[in-house]
Length: 525
Ligand SMILES: [Zn+2]
Image 1 (cartoon, rainbow, N blue to C red):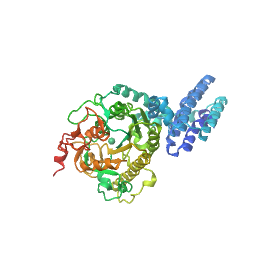
Image 2 (image 1 turned 60 degrees about the horizontal axis):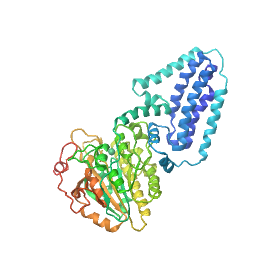
Image 3 (image 1 turned 90 degrees about the horizontal axis):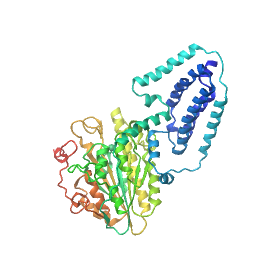
Image 4 (image 1 turned 120 degrees about the vertical axis):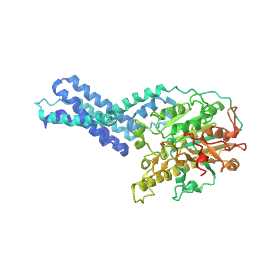
């Protein structure tokens, strides 16, 4: 027993356990049992040498180490309601103070009192004298074996950082790895573009980027399950029937929609003019509100574009890697409040990009339990389809809520709000080739590239005009031109024939996808 007490000094143990206890109080979903197991393995890494060193400075050293690691995690928990992660460090370092005070509601809350017991436990852990006793060698040996098994298993499977490090160290190490790949990207400069506004009043343009959205699972596109109970009731929205994305991955499709790059000119994304450049040059305030991960090999390039906006908000800060985020990201409704704040925060015209997590796998993690509507299934395949459909049902709620917020904000005279929802790419959910996902080998399934697109407008005359081309084919890499057109911006970079909203729209463009195949030829037969 005494040996155990020197291996796990009670107050140090309590101090370490306390952080997970606080996590459970703040947000039960982020409480991690594994973190407790990891800590149980790390404490003896310091206390076993302590049995031999028996010096005061050594004890102060490791108690302080556990204290600081826990404190960083605890404070982060209280402010952001999530564990410390590489994403949140990344965002904090890329956010200026003005933005932080605007969007981080750093309000007093009784939860802050949770810091006091932690401080007390630290004080006692430091004060308590070590139990000076002869050590039970067998107990130490058993513990060393157990720890070796735990650490060894993680090392063998090449997941030591991911599975065997305490939260704070994991966040720091993942962050350092991440910042290396980020530094390799050329930082995007905001470009001054020749452009003026042809609209006399104030305008708000909102681009909602959906994620992994297969339109054949949407009832507004004819799906047999009712996945759009809200959007189907809207009479202030126009649905475009035949839009495809040339890419079935997020980076290619988002960057080609946001810049003048298209399948024909193949301009380098870094050198091409972006919509943010255009709106900024006209004098709009630009916003990027995202529930996608800011970091990760792919996400970095999008973050690089996002950060050229005047204001950026990333609500998805729990994860250290893209992989982790598929299980940890918060629900898309987290973006509704930042949107409302962006709308009322400053006067003047605005361009707001909202990047949703949408229906990204794992589907069951994308919606709260209230949207668990499609539940009858006979096998695992049907179960997954149901989960996907539930995520679509939730997406219907989120997009409809965004339109409602815009509607309630659009009462000001001499102002117009326009919004476009478009998915980055589709998703194959056993629709074709008996597979799931949006990775492809060989040729692209239609469901990976056929995307939903609909337009909402506060002005009925504008809305009427937008209806003219709803049935025409369009490929999303020309969205750059469509949005400039919709915003009534005059610029030499705008090509009317490329805008589906324009009366001169050229619908004869060949839609060649990233696999080099003509979408319309392939799907004609
Ligand atoms: Zn995507």
